[in-house]
Image 1: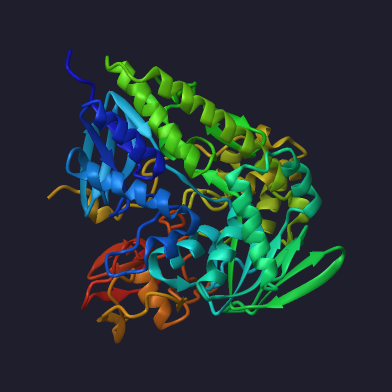
Image 2: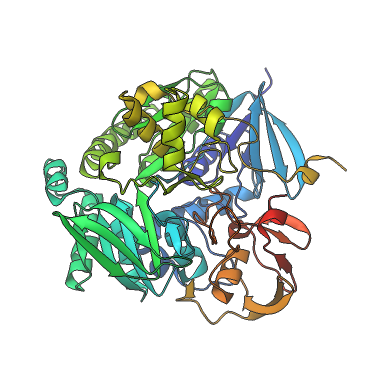
Length: 454
Length: 93
């Protein structure tokens, strides 16, 4: 029997580990990645001109980053590795790609989707101003470009990344004006109390918090009504805490409310999705092997539900072993059992993180009709509300059809989850009932002149 | 954006909306533009100026024209002599 054609999409922690296991089992594979250099976002690499050492760039995670980068560098010559290549469609057991202006097509029998995650963002007044970036974007500016997003930065939102990025900025010499967390201190204490103090991740989080506090960087917890003040540039961030309105002058903002999975390709591949209440998003279903409802299509890492980089590496390896077994190899059963124990432990930690940093409900947003909801099409919250009322909308794809929310260039990556929260609230439905935006190819914009083969 | 660390890279010249500008080797187009000025795209009749958002190729707000081809500024390295045009409508392709 001919070897199945295996394609891994995404060269972050999950994709690299999956590819590594497959290569170890002498299975030919194609590894496609949109970035010019493997590593993904959390361990994003800087261009060659940057000299800052790993320890400075990746902090406590320097060893993991180095190990992952070494792994992809070792693999690059041994497998069919295609960096700078966007997968823009999945259809009928093939992928459509575009790379440097050329379209391509890759057939597969087994597909491993390791598409990663991005920040979950909420529409707050002023969030389209120059100087406002996602937390992940602010981190990338520093990690891979040596830049701060401004001279005096406020970090606002919730989740572990909020504290990590604030710490990284301050440590690199940037001026951090404040950290504004929508999660109240008591919520975090309750959620994290049950976790073993030995948890390395928790210890690091507490370290960042203490480091910021020791430097007198204001950390405000339980904030609501966050808004960014300024006409053509950021002048301040205002917010409410304990019924008091406050304002902090700054010229840049990093914002994010946890992470969301990049699931568009799994959707186009036909995978069944189900609603995940803790993370308030729809995720592709997967079994213990990481296989989705579509035979031969696997979903790995944060693209299948936020678990963090450590879990992503384990999922990648786990799926690599499952695919090896599928291809008649005899993978190490003891290793599989160890990975499953590791993943179970990380899943418990993740559940506590979800409880500690809940997505703030719309009632706590600075919910003004004039605030832009869809950044691509500049559609405001009030316009969406009016459409929901006038057209009696109860479902996300109808909202999209009527308002163009989710139809812009980002395909709803920025506004989709927030629009669903608003639609659910305004129609008195549970979030799961309003559905999710259907994926459409191309999953990212492609300039039309590029799509024609010469 | 302000340069914070690794600031001693060789400088490279490029053209930004028809004017001479300088950046550093290893800069993305986004970094090159936003260290030269505070915005990527000017305000239009619909809403205000923009300067990118996610820096990881998801939000699609940083499309520019580089040497005649539409590219995402956050994911494209600047090359010496590159001609970068930031007109928002042109960049929509």
